Length: 252
Image (cartoon, rainbow, N blue to C red; front, side):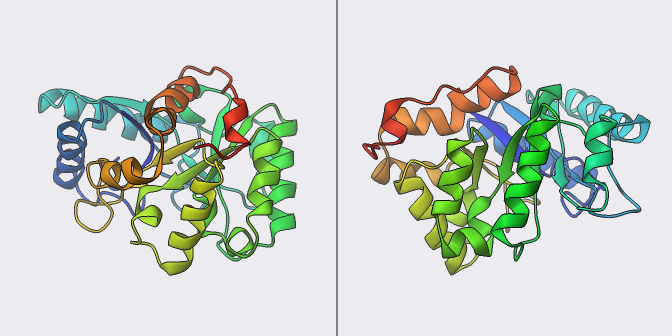
């Protein structure tokens, strides 16, 4: 399985707060059947730690990948970030190609303020697409606008934007509204990917062991494979994601 959204690089954001914690997260992921993690620290969220494309990001990423090898943890680590779409500098970052996409593909993992208006999110996603990227909407179920009206997520889906649900939302660990919204999006087939969005080893851990029984009760095996393996593989390989008819006729 492939985890496309994980705050595992130590001491660069609010994720793993030490190398020891990061290695435990990696080891738990491997033992849970995850063989690939895209490390996605927050970018553009903190002016002091922008985590944008450059030497600083490359250094942190390379050091952690070397640490995994040193400890013999057989996890493939790929680069990425979770870009905060701040209206003040989004166009400049996109124009100057300062963003770190998912494994240097055209796919850009993007987050917003939870209470952003739907029109604001849509406008930012459209701008990202105009610069040649494919927006990957991080945890749409956590945004109030989607919680109030799932048709907004359906509009993004129809435009070819990628919707990534959080494991924690589906399992009820990120609040009742996020849980309700994630279940609705999943049941409507409005999800391309599920990721851990892991930050630690206890409250928001890596791995999908706890998620699989939940999915097996609700989804066809083919859909589970799409969410955790096939679609993530297309993304890290910079390939288009096919949209089968079954996405729209709710047979999942």
